[in-house]
Image (cartoon, rainbow, N blue to C red; front, side, top):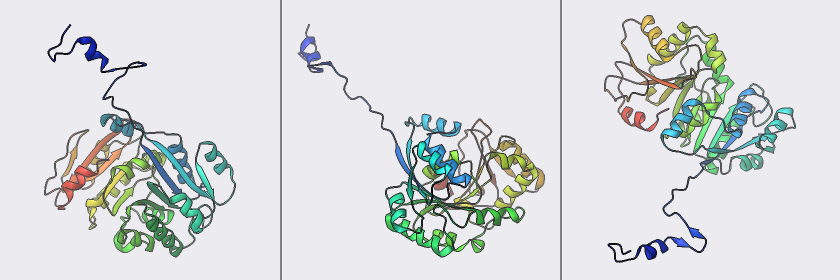
Length: 333
């Protein structure tokens, strides 16, 4: 049998047959996204412990799974590294989960270099204790650590301090302003490090997505408490905090608010905001709708993870930022 090309079917097929049989060509090979996360914080604290365990076990939320599948991305895998100043049950458990723990404190430059070098993301967590794994005893110590991280070349830092948490939660509905930033935060803001400031404990299964999806420099994130903490707040409390952010003079074009709650939905929160402040028009963009950049609106993103992974956005009027459109296109949660 001759083909239009002048080749016989047999000779045509022979071009794709090897000694061991037929092979497939132009086959798209799935590549696994291997990311390295360095955790600088005390593993006895629940937050660093939870994020290390979550990433090491490869867990992901419903929202993360849907986003990954919609972009045809393979499930990422993580190399998790951390510092450990002494043997403990928590450290022993993390080692069993595959976390690479290095003996030493963050003020030990050699140990810090071993953990941070080659990391895609560094979680810097200043915990409840004034000692322990990687916890700096002063702002000067923390800034030395940050300078060294900057020298190594890591471009993404997530910084969370319990000092920040107390500063926000003790003052009712308080909104952090630049003047109230600690010396460490001010250093991060001035530096060239791509960073996120975490002001509240975070549902850590979403932590890496926050770092991965935000390409901006100097991103400031206001993070609400974890699920059980939010659910103990009243809806009015949450509404007032959101309105406090909305009405602030800060440049919140670089801010996102994440609320991880099983009790409240994004629609509940928006309705509560409208009830508390009836003179202001709160615009709610529903689930999975593309949000256009409108000059009169400043947009604040609220993620309510009520086991459905729904994304809600509210946009109060009288705000405008020239970089808003770029921010929306490049930093979807």
